Length: 592
Image 1 (cartoon, rainbow, N blue to C red):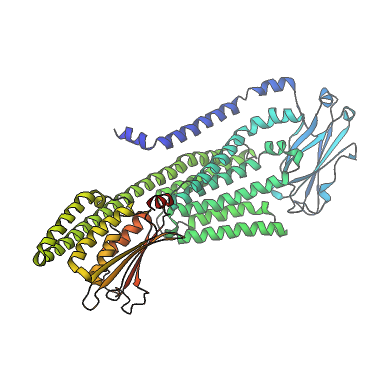
Image 2 (cartoon, rainbow, N blue to C red):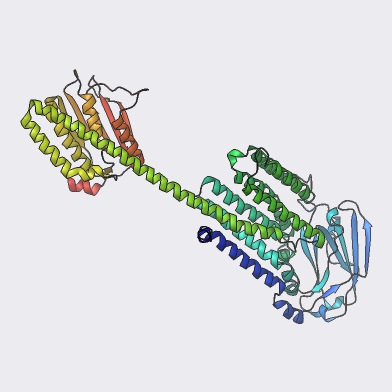
């Protein structure tokens, strides 16, 4: 039973995890046996050029070293293949090359700058080959820009572009290419889903930042793949791609810290918030200094990563970290360390998929969990709000019904002593009123104003029989074609009779008006009886307070009580009900 309940509750997470696992297995199978690789080898072979000599010389600037490779181009069929070329991949290295001393490129190593930053980025050098080059000497001069890449030795291939893409790069980069694309697509989907769905504020932040971190990680990995620069080599975007990847790396670490503060809760992690603001300011400063030419972003990436690791640990101070925080933080850095170990062992990030695998699996499991938990919580809260609202409405209606009945019976009691025959007529009217309108009184929905007006007139008939000429009622109705909560007008009129008919203020005139306003309908009840007495610190009249609460709950209406503005020196009281509803003009025409 417990297993069945667990599977039902975690069905979405299990489905997402299973889908991610199937995608991973598919990618691994393709990586192991891409299928077309053997066919491509048979049709379009390629040659790995081995340099005949390598010379080094010290230079000013950059990494302080320049290395020259000398090759004798072979006299083979590869030179006659359409589109054949010498191709090699460089990272942060300036290249120049010549055939028998004739330069085929600009000597970029002598240029003082590459606009923003010294690096030309990561890119492919492609030297077109012609049959006339057979047996000639190819000289390639490489100038590393940074010390971190001065010991890298490229692989020189005689190959066509299509063969380079399908035979070499796709088998090597296919896994990370698919994982990077999947991370970007899934992260964008989760981030947009978090913004579109009516999620809880905390869950929205957690889901959004988890998606954003995954997108940044995917960009970082994708822009560093040689296959992407090969696909886009005709655009000359190698430098833009590298800076996009570096920016993705910075954003990944900054947003990871923001996600960590969101997992704990913004209100409970002041230290984490300060660490996040510090990291964001530091990342912005690095980018700004790079644009100004003060520092090279490439040389600041590793120190920035170390500093971010420290800030992640500092953000956990002040409170014992929860399992959610540790579950995010420890695998995050363990996966990064695993990729760095692979990089130092192989000299390339092309075979380091651990971090992206963890990010995608984490997004599928935790991202879906954030969204699902928030939706379930929102449904539960909405259900509880509806239940509380219904209970409150039922309580207020039950409070109003005896209030009206008791006041009516008290009035009949007074008539029985003074005018028994009139009391009998009032009882008959009151009985008919209860029989005809009991359903409307018990309704918790909005009712037509005409029904509420009949309730009020029935009540006033009883009060008029009691007070005689001391009570005068007039109606000025611009419209009756609207709806309002039950027991809205009657308690207001009852309150006007109760507090207006007082010794020294009779006769009392009560006027009921309806007006069409720009925002909806206005219902006004005015009397010129006893002057209005603001409640101040004492408790406001229960009946009108109930009316105000029901107006707010059921239709967002308002109730305002103030002194009347009439010419009568007694002034009296004006009660205004504002209903956000438009009149039914067709019903008004039918009524006319």
